[in-house]
Length: 534
Image (cartoon, rainbow, N blue to C red; front, side, top):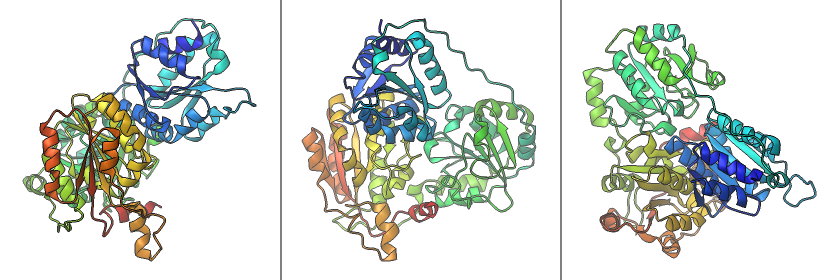
């Protein structure tokens, strides 16, 4: 067995069931070996899209993500998606063929590329191929993105060794004395759960009920407490006015698996002047990385929550009848009154999003691209749980939303996939519409089309700058969708969504692209706050 075949076989034996990529000569054999081992190969039309598909699949399946790319340009094409995964702590293995001869046209220092974006570079050797694969898997399972370089000459050599057993993860005891003391004194505690809490929703909800805490999430953990009447939703730029009021009024904020960064805490403005702040994270380097905390606990979120439950006395905390009534009445963005700015030619994105939320089945998985528009689908489209929302925004790149939703759709095949894109990101990634059609995904692709890069338009426009570089002629994205084999629908008024009603009631045998011509008179509510970090 060659090294290339051994790598693919070993990964399949370790449970890899999907691999995403674009196949070239350098990664042909390893990809085929994975398929022979039982994995499904998902061919993208661009390596950047393939990387984000693998990232999103890992996030919404709880499994290891795997990307397969050609040497040199195959890897460089994928680097934005790999950077997003590395910054997000996604358990992802990148299988990259590698040209090691410096005179090769394909040569680049691939290990340095990985290091530069926060990924871990490894290289396969013939004499230790199975150990190298096992090491890559072990590191990836520690929520790291790993580049496993496969030198072209080594791939052809005979593989030696056997696949070692991987250690089973265990929870270590943690000292929660200081945090328990803070909780015992708190009268208005709020728990903010991030991506590091996505496996521990039940434990956190039970602890919050025990000590009277309100529940919030970072954007990436949206949906973690869906249906819980004491959840205020997303904390940060996407927070509702009521969520802002309640979080700011807390006397204790505990970040569980959450960085409490400038986005989640609105540059610290959500922390009241007398509030205590605590943080729980399995990674010691995360404690206090974005802001000082009064108490830090290093440990698994679920284990810490269970330990606290044993030592903290029950208390009503923030859970009063008044708070309950307000959460029921004004806890969602759609409950917040607004003046509909639809004018017959363009539809208000709030009106559009509320109507979509009403029409689309509740059992959905929503992927969101980046841009001025992104608060609307994030805030207005309800999701059933944390696996129903995928938000690839650690690197703040536009153009990842379509690939995000493809990966999430394959991870959650029983749910209706909904891609929420801006026109800039949609056109940047348009080639993978063919992938959606080829895979037969019944996807709803909603393009919030303001004919420009809205974030820049609304950031620089009020300052009087010329905006010719960030505005474009209107594009018929519905027609482009039909050209790829999708159904296409143009929406300027709420009644134009009758076409979506018909699609939902039909066979759903092809995706539907909704070209929503949205109003663009001003920026979204979160944009001004967000740009304070630029």
